[in-house]
Length: 468
Image 1 (cartoon, rainbow, N blue to C red):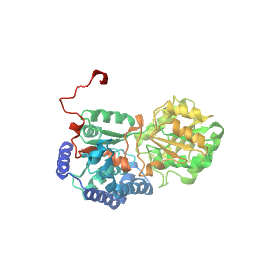
Image 2 (image 1 turned 90 degrees about the horizontal axis):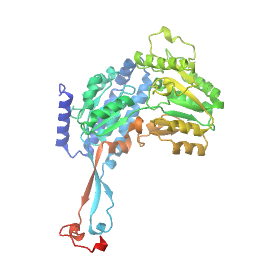
Image 3 (image 1 turned 180 degrees about the vertical axis):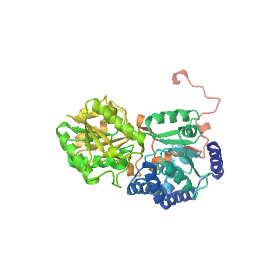
Image 4 (image 1 turned 30 degrees about the horizontal axis):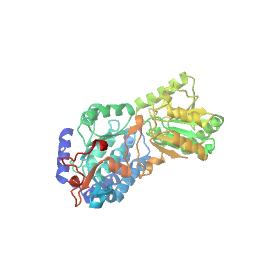
C-alpha cells in the first residue's frame, strides 16, 4: 500500500473500516496500545528530529511536551474507552414509557478521520488526535507539516512498524498537498493551525459536507490582577512565553498589568527569565524560532512597534550578541506602551514577544477583550474572588487557567478547543471520543401499538371545530 495516493488510501481505509464493523473495544484498545508503543519506543528519535527541524530544540522539552504528554493522553483514552463506548440510556416521555418503550444512544465510529497537524508540537498534535480517533473506533490519515520534515519522516517510518496503512497513514508535502488533503471526503477532519488557513480548510471541507474541528489560535490575554503576587505571576507568564520560544497556540500573547505595578512586573519578568535561562545562545533548554522566515516576521513586529512609539525591553541576561550567529534563537522582548495599531496587538505572535497593556480598572480589561476576537485561552492572576468571577462571567474564551498559564490543556478530562475565530469544536477526553463518534439515536418499540393507540393512522377521527 505504500505507493497508494491519498485518494486510494482513503478508499482502502474506508473499505477496511466498513468490513470491520462493529469495531470492538478490544480492537480499539489494541490500536491505542500500539500507538503508545510507537511513541515510547521512538521517543529519542522524535526528540532528535524535532531539534533538527527547529535548528535547536531542547531534548527534555520535547520529551515532556511531545512524548510524555501524548502518552498520558493515550493512557487516559485506554482507561476510559470501555465506559465511553457503552450505549447511553435516555428517558422516554410519559405515558409511552409505561408500555415498555426504550431509548438509547449508541456511539458509533464515523469512519476515516483526517488530521492536519502543525509544526510547533508536531508529534503531540499528530498523535493526540489519532488517539481520540482510535478510541472512537476510526481509522486515520495524517497530513504532517512541511516545516518539520525530519519529524514527518520519523513518524511515517515509525508508524510502519506498528500499523497497516489501512489503519494509520501519514502524508507530507507543502500547501498544495495540504489543499488536496483537506478536499478529501473524510468522515471528519481536524485541523490545528492558524486562523487564516483554518478558513481555507473549512471552505475545502464544505464541498464534501465534511464535519470539521478547527483548533486555531488568536491572542490569548494574561490578566494580572491587583490582588496577585506580581513576582509569581511574572514567573508563570515568563515560563509560558519562553517554553518552545513562545511557539504555542495557547501561549500568553499579551499581558494586562495594573498601571502602578508595571515596573514591578517588568522586573519580575527579568528575574524569572534570568533564573530559568541564565544564558540563551548556548543554552540547551532554550528552543530556537522554527526558521529564518518566522524570525524575520517577529523582528518586523518589533520594528513596527518601535516606529509607533513603543518601548521595547529586551531580556538578554548576559548581553549575548544574537546578530553574530546564524541561530534563529531570539531573546524575550517586552513591548511597553503597546497600542491597538501595532502589529503585535493585531497578529498572533507565536514567538518570544510579550506586549504589555496598562489598566486602571478591571472593566477596561474586560471591554478590550470583548471588543476583539474571542481568544483560545485566557489567564487570570489574582486572589480577589469578585474580580475573578467578573472575568470568568463576562469574557468568552476557549479555556482558562487561573493563577498560572497553559495547564488547562494538560488535564485530559477537560475539552480543548476554541470559539469563533479561535476554533470550532473540541477534543481530548470524552469530548474527543464524542467528536469522532456518531451519536446514533435508537428507539425500541414496546408491547403496545403506539401508532394505533395515538390515532396516528388515517382515517383520522374528526373533531369538533372548537377543539381544533
